[in-house]
Image 1 (cartoon, rainbow, N blue to C red):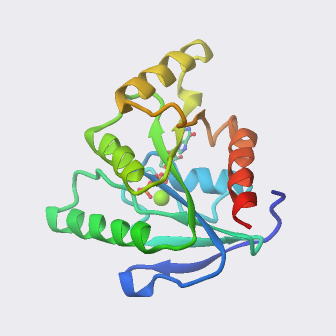
Image 2: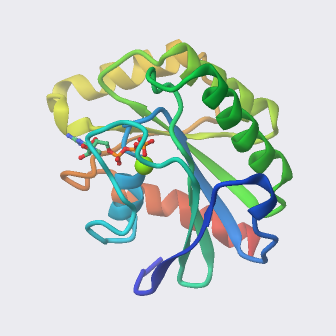
Length: 197
Ligand SMILES: Nc1nc2c(ncn2[C@@H]2O[C@H](COP(=O)(O)OP(=O)(O)OP(=O)(O)O)[C@@H](O)[C@H]2O)c(=O)[nH]1
Ligand SMILES: [Mg+2]
């Protein structure tokens, strides 16, 4: 998709504020600091529409970006931020869960994991949970610029093994610094949007 028009249309902090809309939705999930907001900025070719930060826990609301009046990119708050209380974590879990379960327009969930590290227990839970809800997550292995080119396939293999990934789960190495993986990712997103339009 060629992106000219995009805006942050809705910031949702409570379940009862979730939109009932017509546009298709694509959600971006993953642990705090993995690069969700940066990925959205890269896809829409904006430097900083989605707020990013070196401090984990930047995105705490569910943010709906209207892209070309065709699709919402849904930036989810990150999980696994150690400094957050259990109560907050539970609230997060309920919030995300309610959104994913209740959205009628959600067509694709991108699960972001850091290409350098083994997935955390929460990453594994999230992966399995997305499958359980009937979606096949598209796994984006972020921050590939931090690895040597020769290491990338090895790390993708480790991620597949550790997540015990299904055959039809697609893995895309990505960097929002070098923009590697951007075209491939758009290819996947366009394909999902097309079948749903
Ligand atoms: N080297 C490198 N750093 C990245 C990349 N993507 C994001 N970062 C950095 O990682 C940090 C976190 O990025 P964000 O995009 O804010 O992460 P997030 O997943 O939205 O974080 P929360 O909103 O806290 O859930 C920032 O300092 C980014 O500059 C990447 O591809 N390569
Ligand atoms: Mg964020």
